[in-house]
Amino acid sequence: MKRFGAILIVSLIVCYLATFFFAGVIMESFWGNVTIFAVLIAITATIFVNQQVRLEELEEKVATVTNHFDRRDE
Image 1 (tube, rainbow, N blue to C red):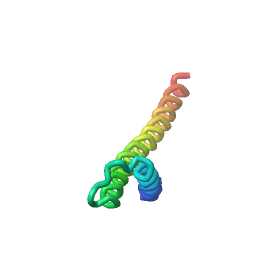
Image 2: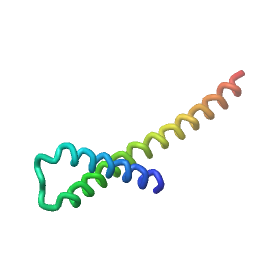
Image 3: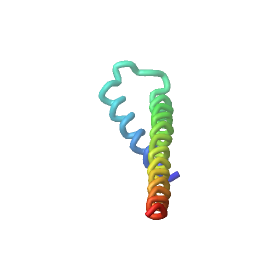
């Protein structure tokens, strides 16, 4: 949950800055749209970060199992 909060904050900042510089098309609920897009970006980024963490944990487990069988064969 900490990662999601951090990614959400960064996403909000990026969206606010992008909107500030590229606000040629102003929508009715300006801040609502920015917040919705930031949440969507944060959810997507959080999914990718969690997958990366799970992949690293899996690589460590595979290395442990491989080392165990390598020592067993010797």
